[in-house]
Structures are given as structure tokens and as C-alpha cells.
Image (cartoon, rainbow, N blue to C red; front, side, top):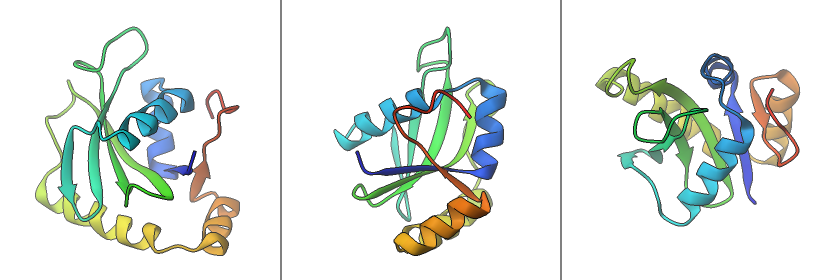
Length: 128
């Protein structure tokens, strides 16, 4: 599996929503097969993720930065009952973040991980 990461901001939301890294890794596997909910432009996609005890329909929405290749960055998440979508200003800001992260080389990724700005997911991470 390619490098899958979550930002510090996304991690705070993940804990509140009680999502697991395993659920995110399943979402990436689905996205690799072309199963996305919306292409938001600027290398951002929206993907539904089931919350514990719920299905995807009423669950969480995630905004993911990717070029559908080597790296996937979970940037933002929200529950469907909290809001319908991100607004134009939020989308523009997320696209800027995506642009920066997707240009990182391996050394820059390692520095960001050590600094705690992003966290790499692996199959053995239950939840962090």
C-alpha cells in the first residue's frame, strides 16, 4: 500500500469521531479502485467513511489529498449531520495544503512525521 498519512488537525477530529486507522486504510483501498464520492479539484477527493455502528450513508466525510499514486493525505473530516460540505474558502485552503504536501519528497515527509505535523498509517495501527 502507498504512503497513507493524516494531518494533526485530521487526527484530532478522528479521535472525536471514533474512527480508526483501519477504516481509513479501507477507504484508501476503495479509492485506489476508483470508488470516490467527489473529485473536488486541486488533487482533492471526498470519500465517505463509515462511523462505528453506522453505515457510510450517514457517517463521516473525509477530504483527501492525492494524485492517486504514491501518497494519500487525510486533511479534513466531518460528520454528515454536522455540515453538508466545505465552503469555497475552506476548499481553496485545503487545495493549497494539498499542493504543498503532494510535493514533499521522502525526506520532507520524514521531517513532517518527526515534527508531529503528519502521521503515517500502517496496518498495525489500531487508532492513535
